[in-house]
Amino acid sequence: MSNIREAAYMIAAILFIVGVMRLRNPATARTGNILAAVGMLIAVVFTVIGASVGNLVLLIVVFVVGAVIGTYSSRAVKMTAMPQMVAAFNGMGGGAAAMIALSEALQALSHGSYPGLSQAIPGLFDMLVGSISFSGSIIAFLKLQEWMPGKAISFKGQNAVNAVLLIVLVLLAISILIVPSGDRLALDWILIIGSVILGVSFVVPVGGADMPVIIALLNAFTGIAAAAAGFVLQNDVLIVAGALVGSSGTILTLIMSRAMNRSIFNVLFSAFGSKVTATGTSEHGEIHPTNSEEVAMLCAYAQRVVIVPGYGLAVARAQQECKDLMDVLTARGVDVRFAIHPVAGRMPGHMNVLLAEANVPYDRLYDMDDINPEFQRTDVVLVIGANDVVNPDARENPGSPIYGMPILNVDQAKTVIVNKRSMAAGFAGIDNPMFFKQNTKMFFGDAKGALQSLLSAIKEEVA
Image (cartoon, rainbow, N blue to C red; front, top):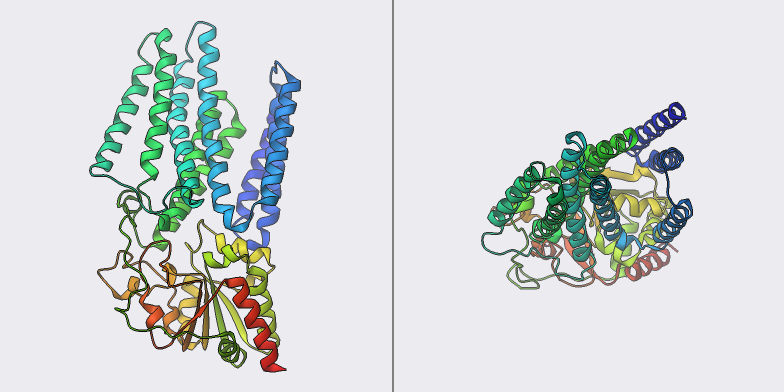
C-alpha cells in the first residue's frame, strides 16, 4: 500500500507542476486549474487511505462541509469580491498549516515527549510563518472589503517595533527547543499569538494601492508554511505543493513590485497612502465633461480604440458590456485592443480574469510594455474605472508618491475618454492631472450604465 500511495503522490505532484505551468497562459489557465485540483483530490484521498483515522465519519462530514462551502463561495462570489476571497482562503491555508504543527506537538506531548529536531524546527517555523500569513491575510481581507480603512495605518516607530517583535519570536522559537518538554506547549501558544499580532502589525501599514503585492507575498508565506507542514508530517506531496505555491508567490511578488518600480522593502515599510491628498480641486484646471453621443461618434469613426479596464469596471460588473462594445466597434472595422496594467484592480491578474469571464479573446489583451508604444498612434483610449495606473504624475512629477511607477501612457493618445462615477481619487489616494488635460474628456457615470448608453448611441450613430 505504501508503494501505491507514493506513486499516487508522484502523480499528484506532476499534476501540480503541469497545472501551474498552464496557468501562465490565459488560454490554458482553466485546464491548468482543473489539473491542479485533480492532483489535490488524489493527494487527499490517498493521504486519508494511508492514515490511521480515528473517526472516519467525522472526517467525511468535514470534507463534505468544506466542499459545499468552497463550491458555493467560488460560484457566488462577485468579481469585485474575488480579491477578498483570495485573501480569506489564503489566510485559512496559513492558519491550517500553523495548526498542523501545533497538533503534532500536542500529539507528541501526549506521549510524554516533544517532536524531534527534524520535525520540531519546521514545526516552529510553520507556527511562525503560518500565523503571520493567517492574520495578515485577514487584515488584507478587511481592507479590501472596506470593513477597515484601506489606507496605510501606521504609528511612529512601527517598523522598529515589528523588527523587535520578529527577533523576539525567533528567539522564543529557539528557546522552545531548549526548555523542558513540559513547558513547550505554553510557549508554542505564545509563539502563535505573537505571530498573529506581528501579522496584523505587518499588514496594516500597507496601503490599498499596494494590495496586489501584499496578497502575492502572503500567498508565498502560506506556500512556505504548507511546505514546512509537509516536513512536519513527512508528506512529500505537501512539500511539493507548498514549494510550488511559495516560489510562484515570491516570483509574482517581485513582478508586482517591479511593475510599480518599487522595492519590496518600500512596499512593506513605506506606509504608502497614509496621507491622502485633496481631490476635486481646481489647481490643475478645468475638466471637460462629455456624453454618450459624443463618445459614440469618436469611437465609431476611429481607426483604433484602446480600452483600459480598472477596478470601476469590476465594481459595476460591466465586463459583458465592454465585450459588446468591442464586438460593435470591431464589426465596423475598428481595431479594438485592451491595455492591461500588471497591478490594475485589487489582485494580480484581476483584469485578465474579469475579461475572460466575458469571453474577450486573449489576443485582444495587451501587456503594458506591448501597448505603450501604440498609444501615440491611437485615436481613442477609453479608460473605464482605472485611475492610478494611468496617472502621468508617475512619469512627470518627481514629487508624486508614485513617481517612477510604470504606467499606461494613455495621455499620449489623440483623445482620452475617462469613465468614472466622480472625481474621487483612486485607491492610492492621489489626484490624477490627466483628467484636466485638453485631450481628456470625462464621461461620468456607473460603468455599466455608461457603456449601455454608449452602445445605444453607437447603434444610432451608424444606423
